Image (cartoon, rainbow, N blue to C red; front, top):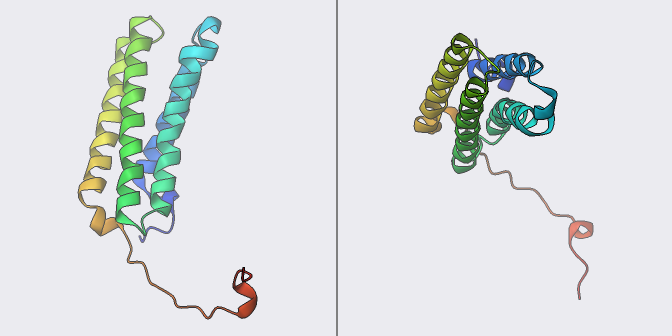
Length: 141
């Protein structure tokens, strides 16, 4: 099946699943964590998925595609750090930690693979010459 949008990417689907799972897990965090740990944890997990969709739209330019995927990698690593903090604070079980941490490891591996093979993912940009009408030109000084 040809990939038509970012929603067809397996990494995007997995990132969305993880973000939703973190949302559900974090609903059980103490109220005093709402504006600190909970918010930051949710934000970075959502950013993983959002940045994958942005990278997909930037694939016309290899450097922009790689830069956005690099953001995905760092946000996923941040999610792993927050997951470890949740474990240390007793907000999740060791099993929950291991399962989610390893899923982020695999997601990061996929992202690194996309970065390493960016040429395969990026489409060739076509330069289109357009006629500039006089009314499109800035006024003369």
